[in-house]
View (cartoon, rainbow, N blue to C red):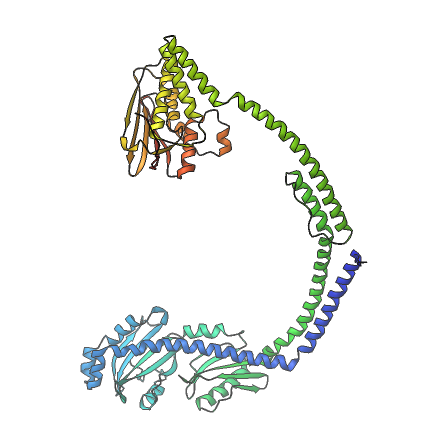
Length: 599
């Protein structure tokens, strides 16, 4: 016998399982998280962070160097440097060389503030300075003794054999900020050792500052950039008095070329160093050990999170269990409602082996019984309805109507009642054409024949003196049109346009090809209508709304045409009160190869 668990047993086992799992998770996290490992991981992560920052610094510097290299494309300037042209002639000839190069090759976002071109004798040839004002001032010549800008480093670099671009910097007292300096030697192409000049490019430090701030954890972390053998060129962060002393020692050792270790423990602080081989521009940081130990607090927070997780899990489990109990009942009620609405084939699915599952099976059996009874009753009613339908159909058989009208026409003709005979014949043709629901499409020729029969009957009935003009192009006679598309428009003109008008009454029917489409125009000289009335006639309605109308003329035709051919087709109405109305039917030309009579 299959064992069935009770609901309270399921709830108890689930709660015990969740609690046991949470305790195991707490024990594992406590054992897996140790002080030394967290501290070591924090140092490693910070070192990788500095490496990422170094990569961004390198990319920023590299982009500037790639632009400076384009100076070799200034062939006339380079040729004069090769020829050793005197500095006076060079200054006279290339006075705006630095300005042109800086303004055309660099983007505003590169933040170039000054550019200097020198020959191999350290003589200035051309200078560019951006927006020189008392608060934004830069030297005309970096070797100007009246303007201290760390130019000795540049001189030493130029006189050395180092071919890699120099990165240095200086503090600009007018700007009140650090300026980054890049120096690139210019060589005689083909003679790598033959130096013919160099370019000095000073850039605003805000680009690199934004990179450094992105990688700074907080203000207690001190970051700076410093080339080996040179002074620091940029820094972010704050230091207390003890920190300032420690940083100055590190920076002095770097300037002397002595500091090379990657990570150094220094009392309550840790020193990080990431070297860059290409430009010799290294990244350094000094941060309190307290920040690195911050990650150890994660252990305590984990324990708190576990407790909260246990509480949250208990709530979720309680909700799930409750939902498990009530969901079958809700499904049963929903199934009953949908069956009431007409979906009688629905049944409850995924039934369990408990008491609620047994209730669901009994509910399905009851529905099967009810469905069988309903089916029997429906079949009985269907037989009655079929009998009633056939009886009604036999009474309104169209053939009975056609034959009767034909008989009346023959009798009237034998009695010399020509008009009655013609009227019966026209009515017979009208009904035969209108009630042919097997063929929803006709052609222009058939529609005009049907219209003429209708006009004849209306003239006999109304004794109206209306003049009809037909202008039908022969090439459109075989064009397909939806059945009963023209006659209702003419009927609308007679009933609403001409009935209450005075004087000569005229209706003009035109059918022609226009721009690849079939255009049928029905125009009268009746009373006309307002724009509001036209809008009501052509307003798009739902099928249900259209069914409630007593007249299906203009509305029915317009909706049928749009459904068949698209929104760009259908009826258009132009009218002027007191002068008449013009209704235009526009549809694509489609040939309907059927027989048609003379029109």
